[in-house]
Image 1 (cartoon, rainbow, N blue to C red):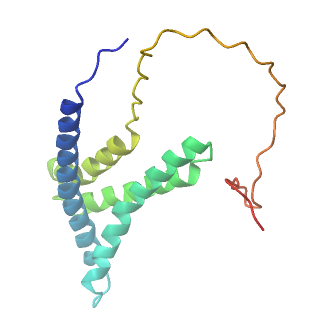
Image 2: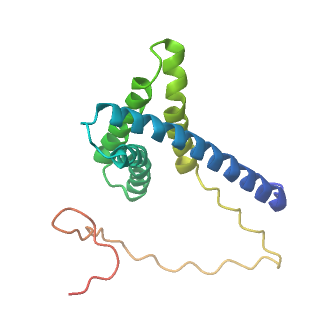
Length: 176
C-alpha cells in the first residue's frame, strides 16, 4: 500500500512546472521562430513580405508538435505512425537547419544557436510523453463481503472491426 500523497504539494509542484514549461516554451519558441524567420527572409526573393518569414517559422515549429500528438494518439489506437514520424523528423531537421544556418560559423556558435530548437523539441517530448499516473483506488471501509457466485462464462467470438474504405476504423454509432 502506497503512502498518501500530499495533494497540496502536488498542486504547487504542478503549477511551478507549468510556469517553468511555459516560460521555456515561450523563450525557446521566440528564439527559434526568429532564427527560422531570419533564415527564410535571407533567402526569399526581393520584395517578399516579412510575414512570409513568420509564417514559415510558425509552420516549421508547430508541425513537430502536431506530429508528436498524432504519434501519441496513433500509438494508443494501434494505428501506424510512419507518416507522422516522418513529419516530426523532417520538421525538426528543418528547424535545426535554420538554427545552424544563422549561427556564427564555429562549434560554439552552432551549439548556442541550436539550443532553442533542441530545448523546444525536448520540452515537447517531455510534456507530451509523460505518462499520467492513475490514483490508486481507496481501500473499502466496510467489512468484506463474500464473493458472489461465479457466473458461467460465455465463449467469445472475435469480431473484425468495421473500417472505412481508406482503412480508418469506424468508431461510435454508424447511421446512414
